Image (cartoon, rainbow, N blue to C red; front, side):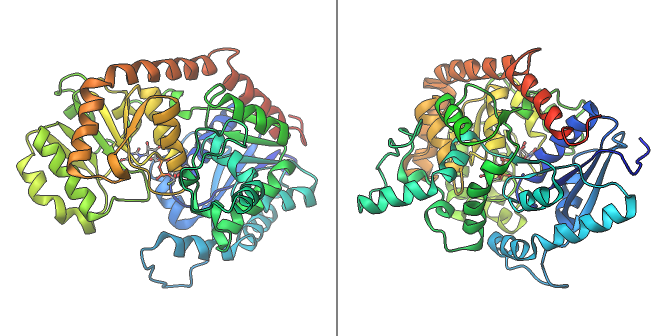
Length: 454
Ligand code: U2F
């Protein structure tokens, strides 16, 4: 596509941490295919762009261009390793970093922005959009329950204060629509304590979301129906366009340098435990050791996505002793791994993308949530959908992990697979012709082009 002055121009801002930037870019690719006459500019920090663009191939997407924005870190800054440090520096640099870079791009290309499609966390996009008289579409990269809870922040605070029972971690949030299964202990710290910049960002997001032309989710209709209906009352439009893991995955996978798929092909059906804790975390040392001891004692074949080189030495002996039954890689093609018939259990931190991929792959999950929305996701998986189990006491111990593996790989695995199968069918229906996600995607195309019909 040759970009011209009056070319419709969708501006996307990524939140550059964890897996946030990747699903946003996948959504842009889908839109760019549906709208070949529209230009898409994707703004992300250099560090995050480097990571994302090494995995997402923009070859053939002539109407998509990625740009770097300042991450707020002073030149030569050495990060402490605490992820909050980088997040807070980035927040401090916003929105000026995005605003300046966008002005440069508009100046260089002559293409004015016609729609903002940004990570919901970057709520300030609505102010830019309103100044320009164009729509803001917010992309929420987790499920409906966490975003709905953020919308109820004030009410949650006043109810907990009123009852003077903030300490009662077992109290359920049954005063909110669709939340009777959620406990106070499941709530993210950012929602309970509003004193940090990241918490403020999420609170401000909850105030801004009603101004969004649409909230787009990587989820599918029917997974949390009461919450979805309630969200629809509060927001202009709620568009589930997922799960993205239902879309055809690239063949061959671009990132199977470790040879995971050929290794899996030599394993028995539903026998392998796949371990991955997403893009941001590694369990603490005692839990890594407990996990390893449990796998070794039960002699369970395992595939472990393990990137944290600073902790690798803890497991060297285990890897050596179990190399005939196990495989460790820096990065696994997770989507295809979970679709492989040899995988019988997914040991996960309950990040939303992993949950969706576990469902579409049909694999029962062992849940060890750490922060953010992960405790909420674990609650839904274990207590509501019946597709996973938590570990006893909430942390990996040898005996708790052995018990969870027993449950998933033998005793309750069949029932969980049936439950996952039902959710998976729901997801497939959403993607069928006239399915809800297909129709919602068409609505999204309409909104994205509304201020500049193509
Ligand atoms: C944050 O989650 P994470 O990025 O830590 O985890 P996920 O949402 O589960 O996403 C991880 C993605 O990385 C992929 C995997 C997922 O799409 O398939 N991946 C892979 O392909 N190979 C590997 O070896 C390891 C991972 C946050 F921490 C969560 O609480 C949120 O729910 C989430 C979404 O907002 O973002």
